[in-house]
Length: 292
Image 1 (cartoon, helix red, strand yellow):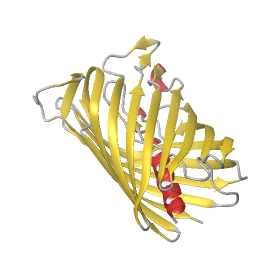
Image 2: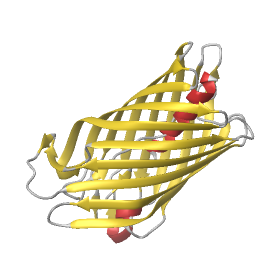
Image 3: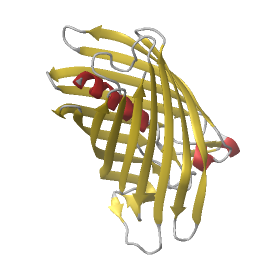
Image 4: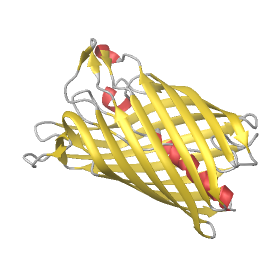
């Protein structure tokens, strides 16, 4: 039972990472979290199995940052972002899983004090293949690689970002009977989009520890480092773009037969921005995971 719960939770984490949103080059870029995999078959689903994940993610912030320094509040600056995501995965073989991801913003409110952008709509869609390259059941460890691409679903860069290549790496290790560790990395390398704008590339690395608390309830603690390079316009760097964030993300998941429900809180603890940018302060979310 614990293995099933842990598997569902880490699938949630993996999807959560994909949901970061990139704003226009003149504004901040907001992080989020990702999908990692599960216990005995990290990163891939069992052959012939279907998994559906639906997720709601909220991000709030109310201060500008310059580098790592929080600035005084001179305006009515505030960001409130609501993101919804759907991930559908299918195990084609015991080592290969194909996933599709789609996201949307029911509400994306960016108030910079001197200008405000309040928009909504679909974000992007992605198709990713994941393949297990190493599995050692005797020592309870596994390595899975992922490769895919993303496409914007609208012409609005604030909502959809740019086309890009997705690279993923999963490493799983069982430490004790009910304590597992996962190292996850996801890179998104963006192509030039509309108006000759090339958004900054995203590199996210996380370390997860998961442990059973009571029957059907599992706890997870995640330490995540999220790095975004500067954006460019006609090969010229754009000011006030690029940043790095270290966050702690505690999570809980409860399992009901074929369905799991998971909740998380995202707490940035170290932030460093290039130039002056509106910063996120806290994030929270909930997800439903269905396995068939």
